[in-house]
Length: 294
Image (tube, rainbow, N blue to C red; front, top):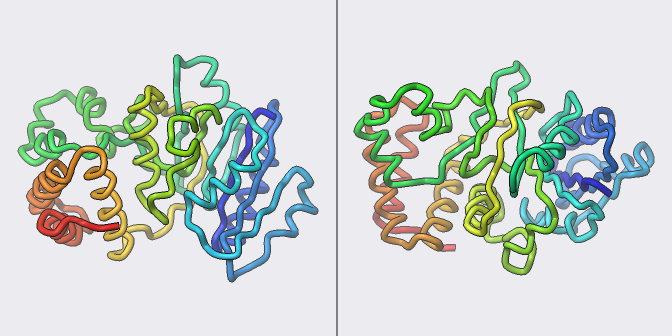
């Protein structure tokens, strides 16, 4: 088996069914299985998809165990040489899995390969990121990044500074399309995806741990999928993302570094025009003052 595609569903039956069908419709030239893990959904019943697709394995959890644990349930029964974590709100429109799998043969030592993520209207999503850094935050705060050429700025900063139209080696990418050889799970404690967080920022932490163990992240711009990205910037979600980010940074770089970064970010968002600048500034300052606990 080449690839085990793992999809975790929680109360998104229509999107998830569309995702599953798109995988079977567009994946060619490789052997694959789809493992659908339902995290105790209270809306819809997707078990019937096994009749439509005999190559689909359906796992129903008795309670919602979160994104990481849901994926680990799928990994535990996976038969593929490679694992693809695929968000339930994504949709394939071409043979993206095989295209990305081919990159492992063409690219020296990638640990993770991902592809271009598009909104339904075709606009690109800026998933290629640098790890949270005091240096980069200060570079942006004092506008020193404007001294760089547009090309160099994109390489250094990534994020919204990078147009995502060319291949890149980012520090981290989103977990929406996360392809990796099963062998690199040995880089994690207990040889499985760390389950520190119920949801949010776990993909950044995974990338950090993999890069630290010599498994870099590769962004392949030659194929794309649709990502029906929801309204993920509500105050509650922003708070959870920032707390989780603070926790993983303090775990691996120390609380002094994490608090200093939060202070730098507080000043950065004093002048930001982002729609959520006020909320991010408030959260950053709170984390600088008090830190966070698991």
